[in-house]
Image (tube, rainbow, N blue to C red):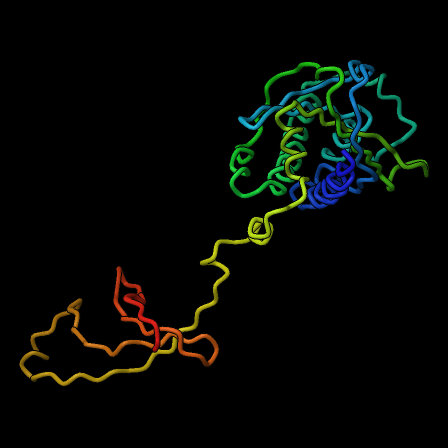
Length: 267
């Protein structure tokens, strides 16, 4: 469990970046992420409104403090800046507010799921790949793990920044994925290959070509039509690493692409 702060630091940066994206700034405005921390659900969180999001990888319960939700709602529709002194209990709950809570929850849960997936080995990451979908309301189990994210708006009215939090409650399968992604790498091959692009995307290959000539009889030349292929016998190509010859290879055409095949070691 001593590695959980490392995950919290990663998630803090992910959430901050997600909230700064143009598509999300219309909701979050000048809000910033102050802290991210793990704790256990003690039971007093039952007074909050929770929305569940499910995927094959597990379930995330999400809760956003209403004062933050109302500030986001007001910013989204251009009504006013955040106000730390505003009394959210005096504001009637609307369908628009409830829809916005689900939308924000799904976006933020997706950011959390992406962080969990990116920490997992490539073979296990596929299980986290499918998106989280709303699964209705419901209280998370007492004693489970919860991630508390504190946010604030320094551009609030009245000189005092509005501060609040939102919570993620993880079920056991997802929490197991978090811990599995934080395990130290003991396999150097696995460690080196983790989060790397496929070999084909990382391998830089240069191709040097030259014009070739072919003698043809005049009658055969006049018989050519658009789309005809002139067969040309080519010498084997040399494959070099820097200035060292490694292989020779035959050059062939496949569906409009030049390919190297029939590799032979250079003696």
